Length: 90
Ligand SMILES: [Zn+2]
Image (cartoon, rainbow, N blue to C red; front, side, top):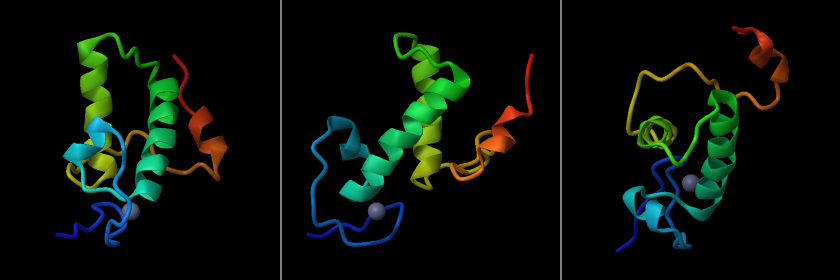
């Protein structure tokens, strides 16, 4: 049985060795991309993974990243345009 990646749509040939990855049909490349993105989200939103509320937020981004949830646009995936992240200060 072959699954296709929820992110890029390719056939998953390499199984991601991560228990969290079980929830998402993602290829190794996209999973790696997500982990990099997750770090960015955590830094950007100052998420503390010891807090359930914060883990919930990250999970939302996780789902959005793999196209399972819509309507999250607060952090745009634009690593080539770092200028756009300096707009909001409190
Ligand atoms: Zn993929």
